[in-house]
Image (cartoon, rainbow, N blue to C red; front, side):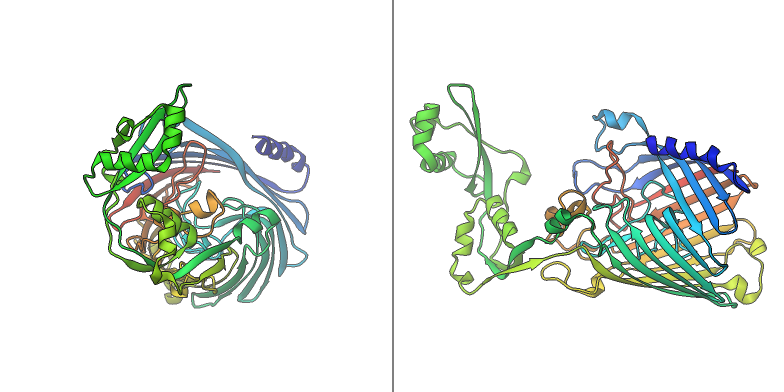
Length: 523
């Protein structure tokens, strides 16, 4: 709350200078997650979840003199936390998050040149409503696309703490800046970027951009963790594994201290006595001296009834995997990982090392064709009318195992503004395609600063989220009031009671979608 109060205190001081404008904004979002799922919590279905947020913002714009312009915005959001199930108190309370929407100054030494610095919004693809804006709203390693965030509707832009130099000459516009990451972990990384835009008189706009994504990291310790080396084996032989069942061994000693151990036994219905013999053989001396168990028959064991506790058998196969994942796999299958590494089929398989890096070179191209400008028709009578699109290459470098093909890091967006002949101001439809076989989970960066994909989905190819779509409609009811509708299957990540985003979008299959309506007031 302190940043918001500090910004409010600056407003009276600025009123002493030149012309100023005070703006008030509030909006109410209401909608429904019509169908979705939470892949992290498989026994919870979020379909039918109510979506609602209320926004308030006070903005102050001041032209200090001929060269300096100041903009400050403060406000907050009332929102309901997303919690799997209904048992958590966090899911029953409306929360409020205060913050700063803008705090920047623009210095314009000439009509063609200006420098913006501070906390400011940035948007280069003017027509994009929900999808697109890939230069900043993406990650390359791991491959992630962001939409929404704190604002769901008509918010395809980036908010940054940084500095941007803009030069405009005729049809050309050039932006060169240092863009600081402020929302997506790891925060405070700085991205140098250049964006060029050419706008022709016939309604055609062409643009291109390049960035050194996260090349400047102010925290050496974070950088060291992110680029840690991983040992992996290429074409590693995984021997055949029989079905195994999980047993829980819970023993209490004379002092009341409990011991818990997990054992696996071959088969769907293994012999419990064989499991007891397995436990006894592992450490009979400790069982006898500390727990008073003098024979295998006295060992208390319980077979885990959960179907997921049974490890299904699999045929032998070869795979390229991280060493730690091979060890984990063996343990989950009830096997000794040393048997995997000593298998004769792995005699010639040498350990290799790889270091991933979230820093990446990004390239973006975008366009817009405004049919109203091309044909000389009126936007007031037809509404927005045109097509637009964007394509990006997220990272030029390939890595072993996971990020192996540049085409799998190449999102494409195509949109259209459809005329409604005065019924609406805007009706836009957007489609997106990204052939990414890895689940779009942010756990790798948000949780552990661990750049291989989310361990739960690491070696599972997933393509049901390759296509995304969004429909947006808006109409101004008067000069103060407007109405918006958005229906989409995008990259919506809801936030929990601590404002942490869900790792995986809740819309991750073709049948998933949500709808939202917004009524907003602005003066």
